[in-house]
Length: 118
Image: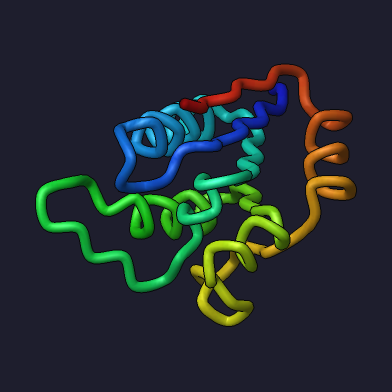
């Protein structure tokens, strides 16, 4: 099977983009594809541990499930710093990384890429 990269640039509470991203990732994993997710801009909130939305899907829990099923999830370190997310606050198995190294690697390893942004 192929590899799908999803770039998410919307925050978890901005709209339903992150929910769409994790559902798309789950569907791809269920079909046997490799999945890579890269968070950029507000999309870095995807990996924040301790999310507790009251009336929205808990994207943090869904992200943890994706990682447990083999998805690779990395977010931009510059973007996390700008939003006050520190190393150690990320969901277990996710990585605060680099747009230069990690996103470019994801793109080069992927057959398809989807970007969700506002």
